[in-house]
Image (cartoon, rainbow over all chains, first blue to last red; front, side, top):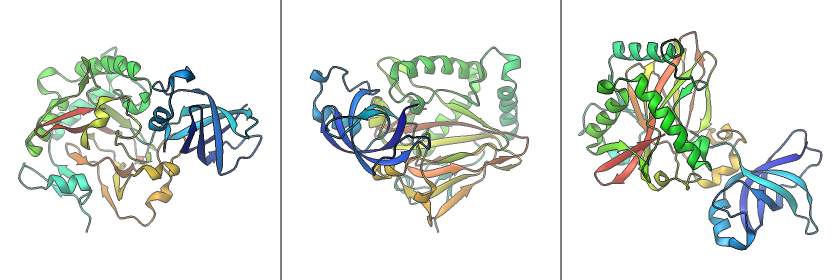
Length: 95
Length: 253
């Protein structure tokens, strides 16, 4: 089972990374995580963010992710100490 | 005192008070008679036996929030659920039309169901809440995370709920005197809604689910539905609507 954290995106760092304020961690996570983590995303379920990284730009990522509540499924940490994750939107604030 | 306003016509309320949250909700009484509501509720609850329309869990209709990043799936599901709603409600006296006409009269604006690139949004949502069911604290405005959809750009979004059947006890709609803002996303619950810490010490208004009454409120105000108690379900018909232009509203779910 992969570790999962949830939280809001506070800052866009690049076309494939952002800073996140972690508000929830899965009870059965193997590791614990800081209140603020940097995420390197390898997958994302938001269609307006192109899969092809060469077609992305930071403002596009910012428009789609800044302040949003997301779910991160963690596969490890990279050399920059960022969590390597598959990112998706999580639930809904309402109907 | 933060209290609801009962309206029966276009001239006795201030639209801006509703938009700003100065009043928690408008209540429009007797939009449908109790006998028509009873007949419609009976039809909905016996749906499996009288038609082949599948009961989709405890709801009939399609919501954008279940399809935030699946727009084409939303429209294909909306097409199916709109047909189901047409089959349930006869064409001449559909309660969806009655709700739209009542809102048009009270707000003095024309109303139609939203469409986008020739595709029609979901007309409405029937929700059935049974004993023990409740809805956690949430808000429903669509102009933050639903940017894939045209209706997310509409100004002054409101929510309309018509009570088709009241439960024996419970099922009250509680509206809090607190508007959502994007910083509140830090208080989200992973699956649905928000932490109750957001509305601690906040004024609230409880609205009982009276059959035939329609409630209109700003869905940016935090709200929840209390547990239904007893064997009689709480049945509602609802949609959202917003300003298309000065004289037009359009609706969706």
